[in-house]
Image (cartoon, rainbow, N blue to C red; front, side, top):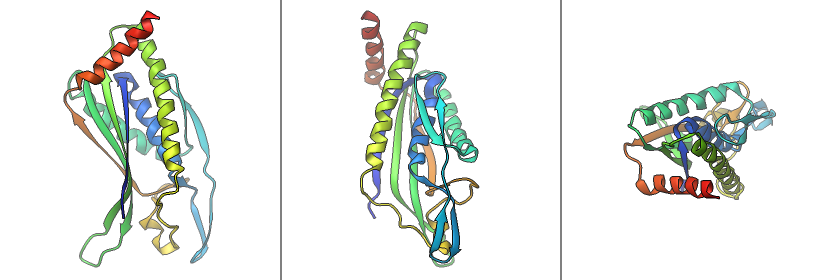
Length: 218
């Protein structure tokens, strides 16, 4: 199986990290989740509904849509919080990457553990910049909102392609494809990981500051 890999890049200031990452991760999971499966007998099932919720950002001019599952939201927020803390501890300006990997399990014979086979990976590269004053922060608030809108459209376009998805499982195999631990939603099996780079590439930092200065000059 070939694993699809998509990369998104975003430059933000430190206070925007949480909301930017939540917006993108929740957007992806919105399209990679289903309602709970209710099996009547092996091979026959119905699928529950998935509610949605609009979330307004505090530090970005942006509103995103997420699955209305508090359980799923807590899991995503915990991962993003750990990522942000690692970024903050890496120094002044920083660069990191948070990845959302979807996988399915392949049963192995005892004594071997199940094999986890990835089929789609989203990597979000984030560059954190320090801004000089409130005027620059306001411009960054608007610019990051515009960029997030572009990224969300990109995510939807990629997901709407007719490419591989794990086939709908039988009742005995549902845990090999979906995370069934949540009571109100059923995302495909996934894991979130991150990595941090200590220094920020000067080209990215300079590009954001030049964009802000050009806007101020208008």
